[in-house]
Image (cartoon, rainbow, N blue to C red):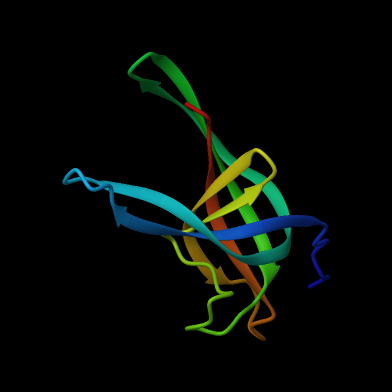
Length: 112
């Protein structure tokens, strides 16, 4: 296996849910650090949304591995941010038997 080209800086963020003081909750995002990664588009499909057809593309994000329990290891409830682009993490798995790299399956969140 050749080493992936980890040339894109992604900020890993974790959700923080707090009370809004009116009986509801507000989700904000806390940055946990920057990962250098490779991003490749994978599958895509069209779905029928409330306002008509929308596109959905999944991405394969490769980054250096971090041990279980580490704040640097991505989880499915987190996201990566690259400038104005946001990638919601769906799944995380090891890419190689030596545990050098992780693969994150993610979807890009489109602005509302």
